[in-house]
Length: 239
Ligand code: ATP
Image (tube, rainbow, N blue to C red):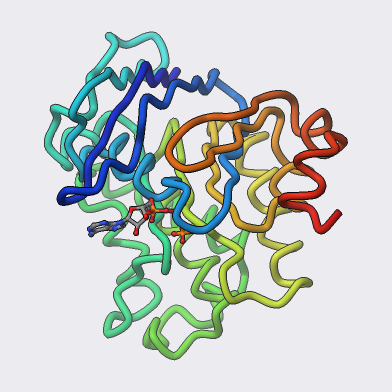
């Protein structure tokens, strides 16, 4: 569904990605783990067209559609093609209400009835978002904001959902709840590419994973294989 081949990205004069190659298959949860500054966020931003590639190709094939080079597309066309990027920090509109944030996720849709049905589904999935529908989003707790970010992402009907550090700043029990929701979202047919510092949780959830070090993929395997690898354990799982 998504293929990166030898992708090189610069940020200013800094050469950040030195030829990243990776794949995400339809229906998978794939995790990208690595230390601070390894280039994980840069990889997601390149996939969603927010950063230009210097070399290499990024190809996204939604369902049975034609392969698309997302790096050359407008942000709107990318969202319309079913690729949704939930950024680090969640990107919710703090001054808008919870329900307005959900509607923002559907800004490219005009199927009023479908939008209403999806809001009801999201309210069933995250009842707190129904309870807090009129509350200003910026006053929600971190965990509630993450649920809103997931709900808003789902409103765009994603085929591939990319999440950047969903566990950031959340208490362990909240992280567990969010990761269970990600597993449910995946079971409903959404492919997931997950960037995480919390490698223990990410490898537990993911079908497959990639380790990124200094802008290069150094290891790949199933979540379980990487979780049991001595080097990964020492570097990312606390020994
Ligand atoms: P983190 O978990 O800390 O966000 P990361 O793996 O996501 O780490 P990136 O945010 O992709 O890493 O950053 C990769 C490298 O790019 C880092 O060395 C960082 O300093 C550099 N970088 C990030 N943003 C910019 C920028 N706007 N200009 C120049 N260099 C940048």
